[in-house]
Length: 240
Image (cartoon, rainbow, N blue to C red; front, side):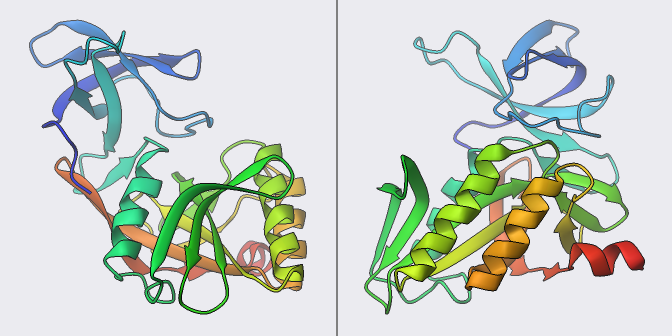
């Protein structure tokens, strides 16, 4: 998935009110950008970090910049826009580039299901209906290990319960984690941050909910779904 507009580099001044970030452009101007990320962004919002912004000239948008990437300045990037994974994944699934999710005739987004919920993707026409919930993973507190979530997510726990209900009805359900970092080779759960989510995940797997972790290729040009990553059980990971 390519960005619609060429990104421009900047330095982060601060992130505040969850969805706002002040940054300094290379010409010295200070601007406010939209930050499409409701999480804590732990380790990704420190003052002085190099970031990449997407400018826009849409008269309907109050803010003329959107924060898209953190540049770790070591060849690696993290994508901070939580709307990107769904767009990138939809393109990859429709192109039949995702192992295990490549033989469906229909890819529908934001379909109502469960109790006042919407599934990210409903795949049909290739066996049982497949319900796919997608989460953007950006936290990494240990070298090479991505973690989810980066803050307490009651909504995330509810999604796992909804997926279990779909399995009980005879459908296929997949919890898909898209790791929006290029510096990680495995993923686990941040059970210390949200033990309730970790328990909900454990319960969902027992019911038959599948887990798929995918890496991404990220550059200032775009974000693309890449190869599967290893999922490490939280208990086993902690004991290592």
